[in-house]
Length: 576
Ligand code: C2O
Image (tube, rainbow, N blue to C red; front, side, top):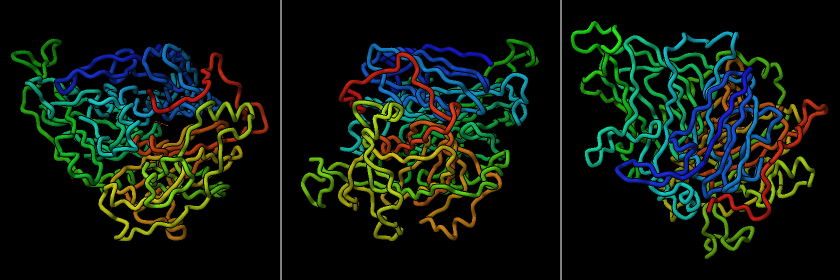
């Protein structure tokens, strides 16, 4: 196994999109940031040099960090952030995982521009991909472009949801020609393909807010992996990908050699006025064809097709069914019988996702209609996550400074059950929303090492139209079932897939529905569990799982790395 080393210099630089220069925070001056490419079993060293004005961390999304929670990169959960003009070196091994993951800053808003692909190939000598070897591999990072400072957007989220829409969507950092301005033509991502060849697209949704539909006119995708776990291949015209998810798909250049648009459409369901189809991003798949008198096989004889590009027909912007079916089609390539044989479940949780309000004055509860009841928060079981401000939870846990900053266990029961009555389905708007008064707390839940945990995530009418991609750090989850409406333990529990459930690090809770997952809490440390939709995350839809040390050295968390960042007091996660 090799050791892969990178230096990430985080700084602010001006980039021009939409005919306008904007100051963005990026790694090594690039958007997307550098791709990290490893083989399974390699070790990774990344020296982060912070020349930005923000407190920074980098999270390796989906990397399990086995017994290495220290490198997980969640500010105030696993580490104090790297302050401006400070450095920190992340070190970790990549073991037992293959496929596409990604890295991003875990500071509110900043992942909009601080992100990149993390590609894990099979180790040398090992069996290769469980699908035909592609001619080329291409990261396709879907994201958004902000003319506003996304850190500022995150900070203001609780005040105005309606300002929290990006200026444009992007493929690999480029907005595309739907946003033509001042005659600037080439603002889109172009993938050159050779007729008949197969390409592996490593698709990542790095966007802050929206699930996307991705289509390429005239072509189909064969999905082969999701969240760095191989799936049973299936063919589809459209890929549905929520924030935080990754999908590996084969693209065969088998159409008439021409030019085909690749369109990413954000499908945030309601809010019809804030997102129009023009909000989509457009890249292009362009066939290289023989030019002039050459035969087309000689070097230098080929050039891009000049055909008029063809656009795909996209799903409706409010279509949530296509996403539901796409996600239902994911099944794992290997059978995960081990989880079944072990049909025991040690801990069950029912987690209701919602929105609520807290008092400005900080009273625990305030009455409806109180003048100070006006801060919107996002919740799990009616509690909004409060990050600690002086020390990370991981350090508090490791040094046994007690349950410092950890105020209570995640409630076992939801505060109330939701029925999706018409009354609950009120048009989205601050005045009409029926929000529960709630409070903030640093919620943690402790698991003994090896515990089998089942969680049902229930979305509510309060979240109509918001996507809820729930992401767990340090562990993969198996998805046993998903459905619409309210979860019914008897009826729905009976149709769990124990044969080939997909394995994911981010699971999309169906709109107005539920999803049931299991994981084995076998990685000692303090792990963030949260919604990957930035609006919900910044507003507190998060909790922390603590997995206790096991009885032996190799089931326990080793000491922190050298030069681990320190905090002092009053770290505000909302960057200045
Ligand atoms: Cu992709 Cu907690 O993050």
